[in-house]
Image (cartoon, rainbow over all chains, first blue to last red):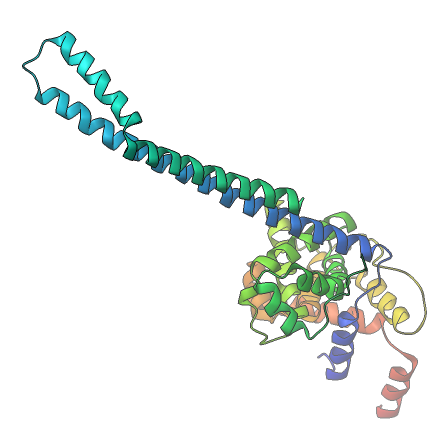
Length: 126
Length: 191
């Protein structure tokens, strides 16, 4: 049976950390990996923000676009050529009407801000 | 630009700051406990390169999970448990966890300056070399990483009795190797 004082001595011996000549290098490597991981996380968050902004912009546009198409198909009494021309005109108006333009520019602006933030933080961290 | 002073304070305080994303505070914890974790992994049986890689992984994992450290034990014991778990995962993955009685060569651990406490540590590291892989692993987990026999049995996926017998045989060997002159004199006096 193990003697309690020997076990206590063994626990004490295990608790005494050996000294390593490259301890400072080890600490620096861990710190560098921590910093890199942090930078990657920020970059990932920024990229996710950009992707979300772009998806939102496309959603806004496609919603407007599908409602315009539905409107065109309802006006079925016109000739096909007139139909196409009217369609083009209406689709073009989606991009040029003041409300749509604002939405697109707003989404693009937000995406750019998110991207700029992510890049700045990443450069700062690296 | 002056040199930044390292953060000060108790481990629990530094860990709380690290949980909030303070990497400097965590860096101080790495500085305080890095050698202990590296030493433990070598004592468990990892070679020096693998031990250092695992120690780094353990500290990175520790940073991620720092919020889970509530100061119930010491930070040192907590991070050592993470390191030991990573080591066991690695040996299981590599299917190298074989509990034979063969004694495997182990690399030297840390600096070998033979004075005072350092000499005791070298004694321990030398003595551990006489243990089989299973004995060394079980003794190091229970006495170096502060695991209970039950925790070791569960992590190693072996019966509790096997862990206990490995620990007992390991302790017997270590006791013989680490015997001090006064231990012999005490035994004679009692005998």
